[in-house]
Length: 148
Length: 359
Length: 129
Image 1 (tube, one colour):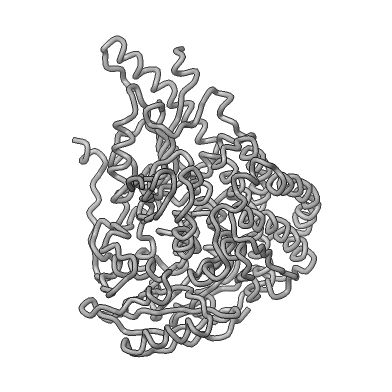
Image 2: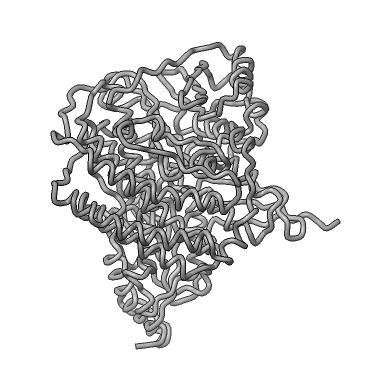
């Protein structure tokens, strides 16, 4: 287990969600759920982050913002799509301005369903992301593509 | 004189849980003008009325925003019920009032936490959110959902609370009140909070009215504007008094919200004492025809749900005027002349809910 | 509880500025401006509030003829006017802060002003390949 896995830093971005999932992501940081006990820290700077936690169905002008944040993050990086809107578009799938899920814009590693996703499942998603992060790190070291 | 520069603020910014973009025109450290540009959360959900049945649409209206979701759902139902001339059971109106007040408390505590965070007061942020979990527990126990409740229906509500549950809620109120007293003391007396909020982001009484501000933003500037005073739903039977402060600065808006935490507790106690027995939902048949502007009070201020229908199962138009949109002109006014370091605090004092604003 | 019925008064575009002035002089607060489409016709409704009672006035509108902006009287109207201009394609003349179509940036222009819009959704795989 690498140091990276012991203390991953996350960046959170709201790509056109209703806020429900965002406040649950924030709730993960607060005393009842407290993800900091796993060493997980929330950062506002994409260049500090290992895990990209993204909520919402991504609307027209957010596509560029999401791509931009993703490109700024250093390798290895993992994307966690939180909430059903981020997974597939959810109830907003048929809206004219929604592209229908984060996967339409950037590659996603972990999907956390739910409307709104519960803090427990968000934490579970992030913890699952850690092993993918580790795999990606190993394949970067050895130069062999891992099966993520 | 120094050169003017434009600093972009957002959409992704550490203090903002949600994306909004501001172009700040600066002269040294002073903001001369702020130009908001929005649209990062615009989903176009009002257009979905053309694809969804008016009864199904309740669930979409609840997802306008995940923070004030219950009141959005209730207001939409209220608008459709008025168009159709449906009189819902009195018990359902009381239940809606109880859940509305709970969601107001959860929203205000959330805001108080984020506000503390914007000042760099991390400890207080954690404290507020710790208390907020107690509110969410009640919401989850009684409705099944933590932030999105999904109990509103056209014609009433889908879940009831039994005598035991109502007594349990009532027995928990003194504990919450004690928590609120402690939080209010910190926000009111702490030197850190005072130095970051007093005299900052001034919104004079006349300007607030002129700019059509709503909710705690206008109540912090000395106007008693609160849609609950109109007595919609069960509020005509509850003893409601708006919380008003006259200073018009960030501190006043903060104290309006801490004051409203207590008002909400009083209203819930009131409602539990007076809730009548009976049904919680009436069957609704047929399709709506007509139009109505429903007006209720959200945590962020007055919200208008406009519904227009022509006798089909899909509505012609649903339009939501959310409090944040009404507060944007006031925000622009408050930002002019402030210092760059105060921008996050001032932006937060209108309690911006971008999900609501852009729909 | 049954609320009282709401009356919406329909006026002509020419009367608008005069009427809004008199609301302003009487100390009303601008609550909202909304727009709706029925068939090919558009209508724009202005709501004002004083002492907890709301009054509405309504004007007919078309995408061809600009509506005079009321932002000289109520500055706050600029958010609503820009919104209607972007979502419905109804022009306003003389908005105090005119975003010229960039307030709400949408994937299709004026999504509410057209009766039928088709949205093509691609599968995630198709976009990355």
